[in-house]
Length: 263
Ligand SMILES: Nc1ncnc2c1ncn2[C@@H]1O[C@H](COP(=O)(O)OP(=O)(O)O)[C@@H](O)[C@H]1O
Ligand SMILES: [Mg+2]
Image 1 (tube, rainbow, N blue to C red):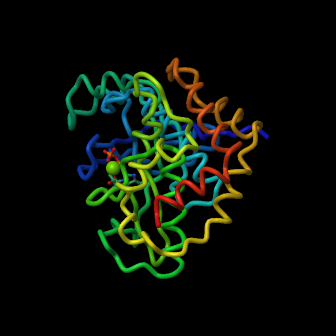
Image 2 (cartoon, rainbow, N blue to C red; image 1 turned 90 degrees about the vertical axis):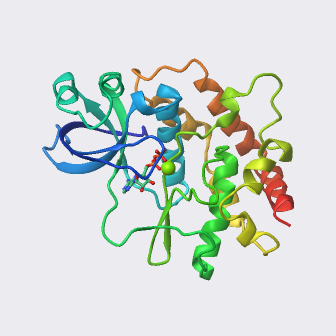
């Protein structure tokens, strides 16, 4: 089964989202195949330090998160054409011009979603989700969910995760890399995590997430890789999938390593 990422056209610029580092833009977008219109928060290639790599990390992380059952907004690849770009003056011109083409969109979550505050009292259900989110971020080597930077919403007691453009941080590492399932590879990621202080020393039930990792078979990972738009170029992409495969093959050791970090 091939993973189909929705492709939509940016039709109307709504506003800039100022809360983040990369000032994503909100667009009303049209699914050309169906005529359906939806609002997407669009991370612009031209606004990301990692450019195409950042877009790829968003797409891969979000697809894996959904596969594992996390709450995360539905995604789309959003085309911004030259005419649309010429109408936008809310951000520097070079940023919008270098974003003509395909960008990363996540469907706008609106109505009852709030940024997760630091040290928010967690229900049992939220605590379980929080433990799994730590594992997820260790898996994708995401250092960008930490105190003051939740990159999570809550609605009721459901936690929603987003913003994975800085995932797979080992891609920028020069020199020897630790095996991704060895504790050293993700230790600082876990210790700096948004939920670390709240969950440290707690008994964590990690069976479900362990199984979720083991379920990422070769076919699934190949499908994810194939779903990346051709237009996004990054010669290092293969390392992302080598990394994921190595963790899948060593899932129990990886989980044990995170558990040791949380004692
Ligand atoms: N799908 C979404 N629905 C609603 N708000 C969103 C969505 N995605 C991002 N945002 C809002 O935009 C802000 C910036 O997006 P984010 O992906 O975190 O980018 P940055 O890399 O700039 O931090 C978030 O903090 C959040 O408030
Ligand atoms: Mg953010």
